[in-house]
Amino acid sequence: MVFSSMTFLLLFLPITLLLYSVRKSIRWKNSVLLTASLIFYAWGEPVYILLMLLSVGVNYLCALGIDQNSKKSLRRAWLVIGVVASMIFLVWFKYAAFLVNSFAGIFSASFHMAEKKLPIGISFYTFQVLTYTVDVYRRKAKVQKNPAKLLLYVSCFPQLIAGPIVQYADVAGMLDNRPFDPIRFSEGARRFAIGLSKKVILANLCGAALSRIDPADPSITLSVAGAWYAALMYTFQIYFDFSAYSDMAIGLGRIFGFDYKENFNYPYISGSITEFWRRWHISLGSFFRDYVYIPLGGSRCSVKRAIFNMMVVWSLTGMWHGASWNFILWGMYYGILLITERFVIGRERMEKIPSVLRMPLIFVIAMFGWVLFYHTDLSLALRQTGAMIGIGSGVQLTDPLTTAVVRKYSVLPLIAAFASLPVLPALKKRMTGRISETLSYIAATVLIILSVIFLTGQSYNPFIYFRF
Image (tube, one colour):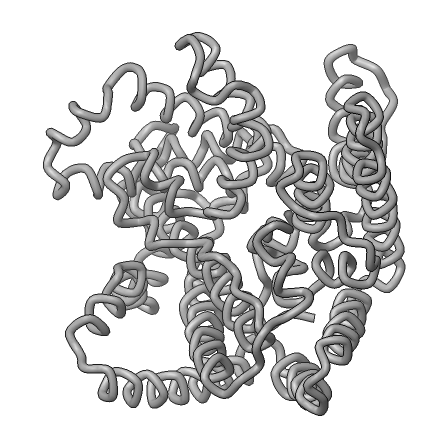
């Protein structure tokens, strides 16, 4: 089940809200939300819900073991058990086949391991339950003695499937006490409407345009224009798709009383690679910073060690997205860029470059990164990259297919570019409170209506990040 489906919008969400609002008791609300969350996950994968329950159960017991022991060695032992157990589940389903087949290829072995079906959201909920165990070990959060509340934290349906990654310490208090009132409901509903329209209207249209000139299709002859247009469409599609899910998750969380942190902050206006990653998938960056980069030593060490730490983090960031060499190389691509920007170019030199030049440059760098991200077949990534810079046998400036697609979706790139800029926040600042509120309600209503209209006529409606 996805947020942008009629089943969710017209059946699941209304019933959940109705039951949630029947009683004011937090115990009742937690019970309704937990039951709804388990149904939401089991709707598509009833078997793999057992895996999530097992992961939560193991970490629940390990956290209790950490809390009940004052001896550092025993606390650390319980932590290791929880982390290792969680990572075993993730590695087995997501990386086992890739690792085995990669080694088999290196040593020319004939053995081949079939890929496992990836449980939806396993990367997200694994990281979330790990933050709980680690935070208890660090004494950053109190142990949760009620297993149902811990399960609710991990499985809460607004952020279960594709984030944002919510650290336990940030929502622990909300499991025991949170508001449910008309003001928060309206704020959450408006945020949900924005996310739904970004997904259904912008992301899906960009995806439809991309599918017409799919650079992953070897039978399509890529021209320079076609390669750039495909890269541009995917650049916008992945942003609107993923940020839309985050918007909807934050909106739904607010409706049910949870305050989730922002996950995107208009990354395509960045003036540096460092800024880009402070604005893109913020919760993932925060996770790797708090639970990998800083424990490794962060930047408070020698330059060589800091470079090593950064490459470890960015290699893991790439691997987190998928068991494929293109994701690992994509992570290393950004790791090298960030190291170059920090230790070779330097902040002062970067800031001397006019922003009117830096922003387009960072956007283009991101586009090339998304080309590598898009293709699990590295030869196709090289093919598209080569076409973008005019290299390759018989590469032409344009082609009839690209011309036809550009004509059909002529205004889409302009609308997408405009929507990726912080226009709405700027307009909101210029308006008075009452006018702004009224217009936002009207806009949210219009967006919901338009989204439903688009949904009834669309067959393309996947969430890209479901596979991560």
